[in-house]
Length: 292
Image (cartoon, rainbow, N blue to C red; front, side, top):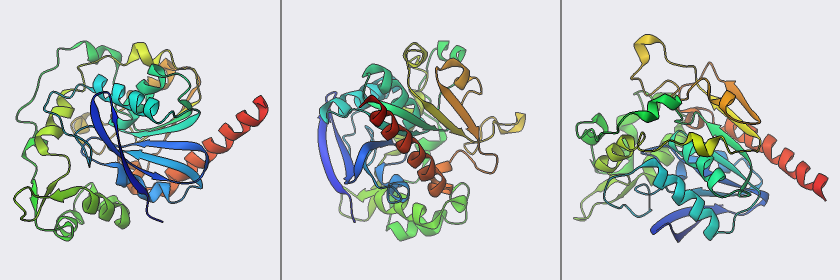
């Protein structure tokens, strides 16, 4: 069954999302920088729960305002989006930047989520947010190839390269097929997250301090993460960006290190992520029965 594509205005930005019917609790998915809602298809299809996967601002089919892209704005978007949909008692699932946004949104709008699954969230050591942010015009993602002849060309180009060669093939196909938009000139396709927008998102990471919000959270939180970087891996996008002390900063949080996986856990092991979502859904339903 294909998900329904919808749009809603939230925090002054038009956001696109895809929704699948199912039982409660609803599962809200938020993707990583440079990705899009349909990267969650392989996870959502394994669930019996209703699911909503959001295209964050600048990504996928959502509106693409001009930079800057401070991450606090993205958290505000997610909270406003959940308000627009009157979402309550859901399970928030976020990967990378999406994990940071979902966690902050949970504090901005209490009651939205009954549990969180943060998959290698980009939540750094608190002292790193004290540095002055600077836009890196020469960030390597700003030089990403933007124009493509077809999704098939993109798949063939990426299939034997890291990190993509570690992904399940259907996830790579979803990433490419839904990660392109028709080119404005009518010839071929362009990335649904423009390279300059992606670079601006990375630059906006330190333009906020999420910890005042995160320390307010009082709900079950499960953190899945890849191993931390070794000294020679500090700039690799394959290793975990999550501060090892994160779980200790949060109430009611547990951490699971997946030694065999890279940062791209949902792409490499969608079935594993789905299993964790199902486990949390059972617990959330149990809480509701207990309250009754």
